[in-house]
Image (cartoon, rainbow, N blue to C red; front, side, top):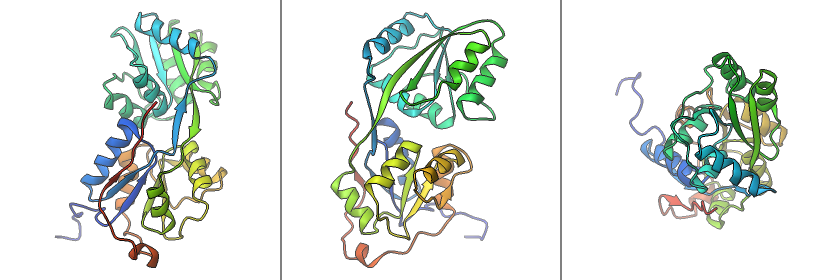
Length: 278
């Protein structure tokens, strides 16, 4: 192999914690396996119904009936909600995803994606792109988390669009499996993927004593900043907010050394402890 060639399995020897389940977690696990890593899928966050589920159900019924020109999706968790409700998106409704991770989550479960901001993968960036694209008033359904700031809604309304902003979910923490917790504590997890500020908070709370050699990797600079605010140190930051970019960033560094504790525990191979029950 020449010095310029990359190994076919650049993550051979890595054991990586995947913090979300469902179709997205399965896709990430498959990506890791293709690079030679052993994924440990243990969801640390899930969604809970909003305080007013009737408002969401009405909005999804109106969506299926074709009442909206656009549907905006600002997180992969919102995709989980759509999938759980078996929401129907008619061909007449265009779908805007805040970034490539959200777009990939939509495509994984069979939903279309018509727009992804080409520069700023944020609510503000998506609003700017949509406002430039749509010069006439449109009916827009904006699904969001309970804690999200109404940046997208406010900017679209200020531009003259008719926006129905609906809380789609509340984010709740999910206890890691006993197996995943043991693997983190004894250093058998070489890397922890941090895919959102909510995940960072759960990693900080559930694993207060992560071994020094365990790499904590964030999916993009914004998530790295959120992790820092949660008190979670980040060693690797993906240049782009995509899971492919995050995995490539890991593949560019050597596998961390094993700890004495991890060497004392037999390796039983690939683990999938995903629980995506809604």
